[in-house]
Length: 527
Image 1: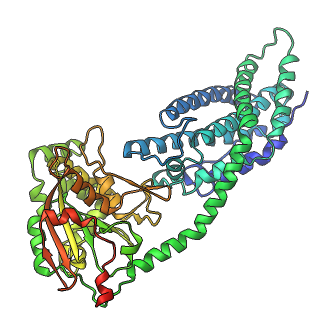
Image 2: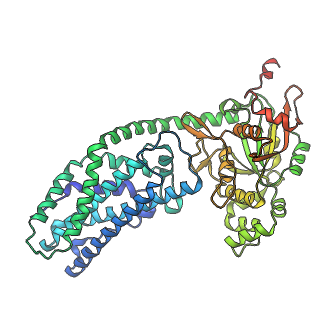
Image 3: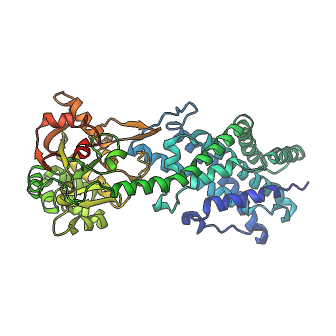
């Protein structure tokens, strides 16, 4: 009996285009073997090897699904979920592992498409390898989508580019669309029935030991795919359709959102370029601040004060100059820790220079004759600035010191160096690691881990998006002040006296009240 699955050819080509175009990790390695030109002995060896390969893939998919269980469940809440760095990386690792299996399965499908042109003695195995690969891809794809689709943190993470693996942005969305919108699912039954006929027509005691394990794989993945197709596919397709409308809307809105944000960043209701914080106060700031300190800033008469929640719209991380950082961080504990990571380094700053060459070069470059001492997220992305180029542009500024060891602060600074050069997140979400807002840099730099103490911040949900307004940091300081749970100490506060048009040093009590102030100074309307 001759079985054909030409109906899957379009699917295979579509999938290979979906997953591999623009993805050098896979595209450069796609060289399907033309099995019709192989000698009999070579073909026999290949079929036997591919049957074993399918067993390995099946076990790999089972392991991936076990890993998925700790993150993805059928009872996922629609409420935004915040994932730590380790969790974000593990989810990306699961996605990479799964894409590897998709690539192999798609390659097998392409190689066995023309199985019917082989000698009859090879056709049964070849058909079942091709069809089995297709079913494994469909069932695992539906299972993966059922667990991850339409849940904000997973969709955002899985759609991010992964440059080290040449995985482009938006691959997950393409994958989801292809799997849920294949129009030939009804033909799965047809080919599955052909497999059953093939098994039934085998003579008793037939010496085709490969058929039974292949059919077991086909039967298992047919059952899995049918369970989802019959019970949930239409709801998933409909949800995907609505999601695509939302994504397309965001593609239209995002440039507007970004454009508005850029406009607001440049718009001031004043002709002055510098803030009211003086050069003398900037020098005083340098004397009092230490590496790892958190900076809050605000400039009056700026449009961004309306667009960002709370009185404090901006935050930054203080590093000190390269020489100041090297002296401050020079402890046996820190040197030993970083030498354990890189035995050839001489200490913390040498470690930064060796492992983050571009970032460190930008750090030591300085700005307008001044040394860089601050790293922050601005419209141009994550960048270094001098104190005059950051605090000196503000009208209000505060400096807070984490109650952490120098080693924990060093690790926070190292994390900030990892993010240098990344873009500004105009969606203001904490979910992405590729673009960050100013306060997200603080959050991710001080994010606690199993082997690292850090800071725990209070987040806000705005329009369904988890975010950390800089004002939350001030509010949390106020709430925790004087308690055993306090995470930050007060260092200094420059408060702008709008009427006198100057910034003055103020005390901790005044700072504690600052987060309650209105976002907009009404004095300008009386001026």
